[in-house]
Image (tube, rainbow over all chains, first blue to last red; front, top):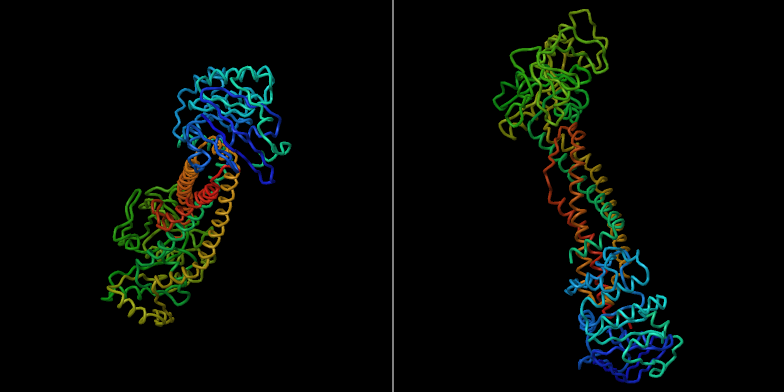
Length: 221
Length: 413
């Protein structure tokens, strides 16, 4: 269970986003919907321990993660969280398998990678370099890397952002199917995908702040 | 970790090849310069230690030492053979070796001496074929291996020498090749050895024949051939101890003796070690310049290596940030980049050492003209220190970079 309490994030240019208290139940899938700049990605980054909140706390399974050191947050992220980044965060000159095997640096086993790649329909690309893949294929590789470590929590930031709707829908279906029994929090602005999630949270209603420039701040951060 | 490091290196092969080449060039040049200069200096000194005193005609000390030991330059002049006889019977002298340098065979100098001159550490030099000179005979030659191969000489062949390298007039009397020396890697490979009296006989014969000495290159050689008393260019001495060597030097330095014709000859006696040291002191300036140049090259390369490594790390900042976002700890990232740079460092330094030995091998022929054979297996402590320093230079920028990155512990915000 992930509990968000009194969360506030202030950026260097004094932009402030305040979140209402939210609770994400274990084993359920959530879709965070909202306009650009409303703080969806910021929330994911705070949950993942990539950003630190200015105020408030994030508690995961009873542990107040926001009070932990960066080292512990990193350890927690690599062991328990599968994060699918909007821009994939893959090393372009490396192969699909090498990108997944980065996790081995932290002792994560990647033996299931071929099976997961097969389920995602890109097993034939496992030895291809990322730079030779299409956007949809890259997204699947990012999903595979997030799933291979069998995380308890999956965070997906605009997983369909670079894809057309048809492919995006396929990716979401695969993601939801692979996330059964795990907590899935996906950020998207496409309401048509809401039917695949247990709960849809409209972030426009639970945050306040100067949303128009938050997006830029997040990039700068 | 190692596997991933190798894969990560493979995708940056162009940058890595540049770094490796840069390290190889800087390290091998520095190591080579140090090794050659040290071996040449040690080798020349070692050769000079073989004889305690050289007695010859007055003139340049350096010329006398370099001519008798390394066959460079022309002889200073000649001295009556009676000096050799006197010194041979001197109880303070354990060995007196006459030395004459006259005539030429197809550009190779002809050295008139005894078999004692052809000994190294008390043992006669090895022969490729044939026999050593017989000191009791004359008109025999033992040729250096390069002279033999250049002129396609074999044992039993007869050669005719000329007054100088440029002269076309050869002496009528042929000399017989009795032996060919095994390769020594020194100046001995490039000369012809004969008994000292052979040179007298050739010139006597030459003077009594139709040939006049029109072409003589050196006045000293003329003197040798026209004089009634036999002469040599110098006599090399081994003495019982250094104290008596000094006595002999004091006695003979500046001594004037008269030959059978009543002509006066002023002698000089030198310690070859001192003469060579003087040469080496002059060469030290050159050596210093070489070292300064090497240091400049090394410093420039340190900068190049550091810049390339830092640029490499700068370009890697994106992938470091990516790994950090995934959750890879800075400790693991540091280790990964250290392994990469250590591999580059070890690989480059090893290749640099190999390259320096290959260059040393090719330099051997050139250096052997100075009478020194380079030992390819000789490794000096300073060379290891240079290589170690280069290795550290290839790793330190990474250490600094990763240290800076580690201080920025938080990923964002």
